[in-house]
Amino acid sequence: MDVEIYLQECLESIARQTFSALEVIMVDDGSTDSSTAIAADFARRDPRFKLLRQESMGPGHARNVGIRAAHPQAEFLAFVDGDDVIPEYAYELLVQTL
Image (tube, rainbow, N blue to C red; front, side, top):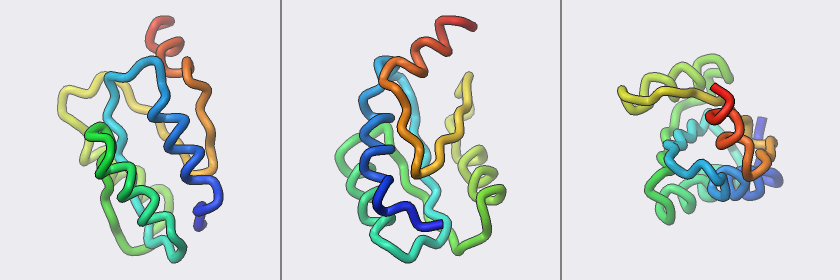
């Protein structure tokens, strides 16, 4: 599913997280709109964001690609779809409760 109209707000919500020690792996699953350009712009501007591209293989495959690309020392994992908006304190709250 192309998420161009939502993606900018989604990525901005992740960039604003109060828990800022995070790695953001964006997997472009063969998008046909400007989602790739939006994601690439975030990857250029913020070193926490990394863009991977693949032919359209579905969300399950895209998530597996993202997991394999994660830093080996990563403690936590969260999946965000391109049309999600995450409250700025969400990850900090989740980590503090663990």
